[in-house]
Length: 157
Image 1: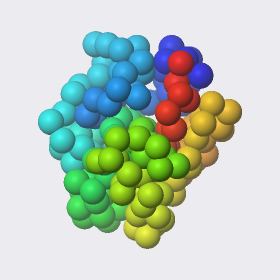
Image 2: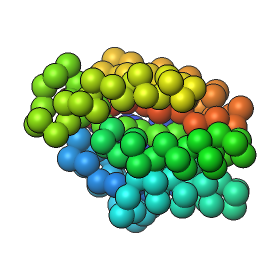
Image 3: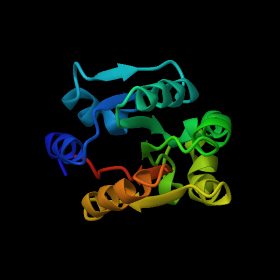
Image 4: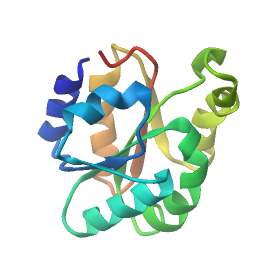
């Protein structure tokens, strides 16, 4: 899926607030969202800003690298999950299959398990599964829950 198509699909699902921490794997969608994307200094900060946007009537999407999930767990568990504040997390899956720079391999082995341990529904996507994952995520978000879509390398064109 190309970045413009992803942007359109997100907009069609009602997402209207975009923040996060840049990652080269998400560069295309961040570029497509120019003027609408608000960069954050850390992933937990992006989730806090997104929570505020939700409370202000917006439907937020946070973009981040999977290495930022560790920073994010406290916000997800003590804010989003306790107060039913939904958020879509589009997360680049660095270290998938043991391929990447060494600093990405540990989180790459454990990020899906980490989300499952904390009860956060998620889906790992390649080129074929992203559209259906967004629809599935939107259903969970409608219930006031966070949802994590892991995006493997070369998924976005």
